[in-house]
Image (cartoon, rainbow, N blue to C red; front, side, top):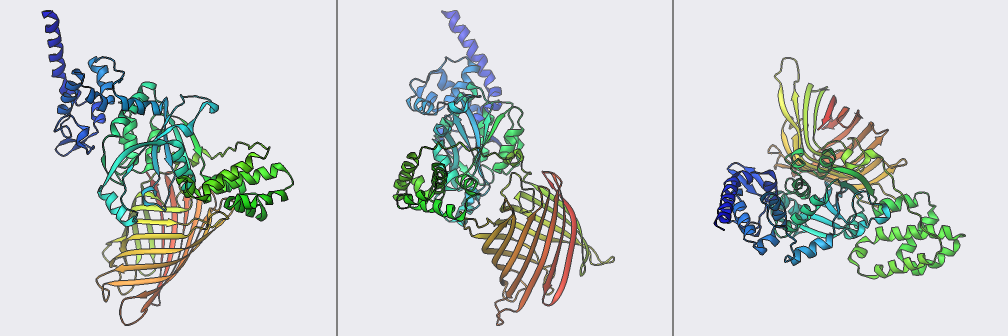
Length: 626
């Protein structure tokens, strides 16, 4: 007996001496979400319940010692709070196999998920909501194993694991300030996947892109246990750094020390970049699927319909009981079935919010429409919505862009430009994998090195510095009468003769409509009314307001060639006695040759008529996406 205790003492002493090195293990660091700081490390978790040691947030060794002590004492409270820690440490320390039979809540959670595999889901860009303007990523814990047949998959019954900010405001400006400053709590939640489909696919008309991950059952079990741990704490949510995509990548990184997904992305995190990071991790993604939104399904199903058929579809979606008799005008049951199937999809799109919340008359109308469809003997055909491989978000051009250009101005001589954009996409960038009718730009700065003549010294000017620039030019269709708009906050060098080379800050807003041309409507004609407010100390009262119309077009000749043209006229008011003391007339265009996803060549020109004086700029250059 003495020998046994002596051996146990030696074993524990030897292990205790090894705890310092174990506390630096990458899996332990990921389990407690430690990140390097100027003074050591600190956990990103912001709830004291996540730590067993009082200083566990900043001391990995102390937290490990307390955890090991609790587990060796079979402390069920600690084991049930941190099952992922126990699963990992049991393999290293030789702790007893744990069935977690006393962890009732954790077992209920685990049984609810029944996870046998996992998928990374990307919900496409939703520019009308600031929280989702750059897209959104979350996990789906699948009840099917890898390689399961289509008929054996119950994806809608799977569970989505979501990380998001607990918002306390609907005001876009307040949200932006608080999200950027980390003033929201970020939490993990689990909801049935069908709810996420109804929220994103139907209510917000966002396509879903699904990436099944190549993870073993042991890795899935560890992920489920850590999701449980995460659901009991919170994080400070930062819109550009510690956001949904960052936390989801960290969750995947946890299950394999070889994964370096978080290391593949820059210091700011764009959801599309995280999907690309997963695909680039060798062997991680084994299958990619596309789940079309209600709008995508509806437009595809009604594209060939006549005006009369479209009207019938809309009427049935609005009031199926009243319009059921109109189906008799169709000669065959197959035609009726096609109209009814489209009417169901139209109802899902047009009344998505009421159906999502399961309230109001539309819930009864949906039931009535389904009953009418059930009486039709025709069997609905499964539709396959195939998309080109390069249309998946992981195949899009990278978010960061740098550009170099050389230009000439008739009034100012030659100049060189250097530009840098942190994210994400403009209207002339390569379209595959990106939102085709939106421009989302953050942190775009352009410098111009100007020389008016050979003997004059060069001047370095800030051509533009856009904090953000957003455009939503969704074309009007039979199913959408969207309001086109743009917004910009930034600064740049003024081109007025009176305030030449002066830096001014600008807020710009515009609204109007867009018409789409061509089969996929990627050729756009947009008319906006714009208002611009500029601050510059040399103005009479420090401010200038400008307003007027703008017509812009975009022609997409192929995946590689595109052309943008713009014409605008503005009346300017300096808040003096004169109502409008100057005008500005601009015409310009840019031709873009996107050689591939990495390189683009551009040629652009602008004409400005300001105070009856005309100047022209022409520039050639290239962009590199990285």
